[in-house]
Amino acid sequence: MHVDHPGSNPRRNRRRGLQRGRARRPGGDRRIIVAELGPLLAGREIPAQAALWNALLPPTFDILRDRRLVIMAMAAVDSAAWDAVGKALGVPLWRLWGGSRSSLPIIAIGGYYNEGPGALAREMADYRRLGIGGRKFKVGGRSPEEDAARLRSAREATGPDFVLMADANQAWLHD
Image 1 (tube, rainbow, N blue to C red):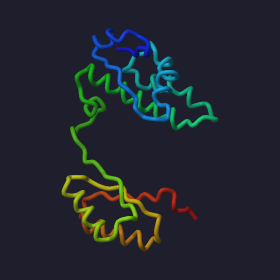
Image 2 (cartoon, helix red, strand yellow):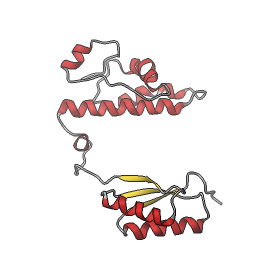
Image 3 (spheres, rainbow, N blue to C red):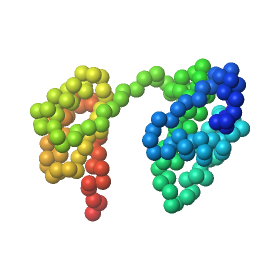
Image 4 (spheres, rainbow, N blue to C red):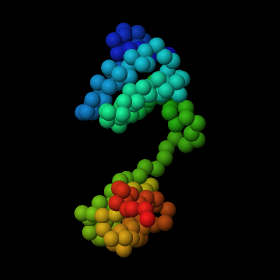
């Protein structure tokens, strides 16, 4: 299996079980994938993931551009390549990557400051009832004491085995 340049024969791709996806993100990911990354990958073997990633690096060397866009596009290509390998082998990605479980608990992101203590506790209990395994929790927008009280409320609502992760969004300084 190898990567075809976007201008290659789509029938040949379909016979190989490959499908061309569409990037629907505004901000140029599709253009970066087609115009910059695609030509770097043409003719390369997909299962050689490290070699593919290394081939994608040159567009990140331009320090005058927003390299985050290139890295997001690279991640999309990397994900598509892994997906193509898994589909070609008939193996789910978790097994292809050496995993021993077919599912993992998810986490939610939240803990924003527009929730009062009662609403926060109810929301946290709802996450628990939905089977969500944890939550990344915003801190740093209020005093440490207020944030600690909010986290205690969340802990009381969810119990000790629910994962809580503090995310200060660069609000704290290292002294």
